[in-house]
Image (tube, rainbow, N blue to C red; front, side, top):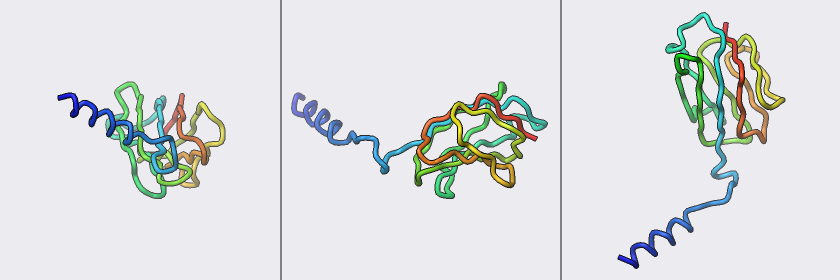
Length: 119
């Protein structure tokens, strides 16, 4: 039994990696505070390098949490409804021309949106 334990510990240590480009993740918390749609019909997505890496539906209170792998330096938070305005914990995020996504700048991996208003 003891050799199995040591094998487990050894494989765990070898399996851990430093935070590098290969294992970077995006973490997003937020709250939708205003919308004309039912919250259950809203989809919130993290897109990285044009791929959907995480998806969530807000709670009845409008809260959501997402996490997914980063496939490029930056990522976006995409909705199936247009964004009217937002307030974020970090500066630099911008609304896309079609108002369907918030583009988060390169280098940011964790962000909180304290308020998101949808049209």
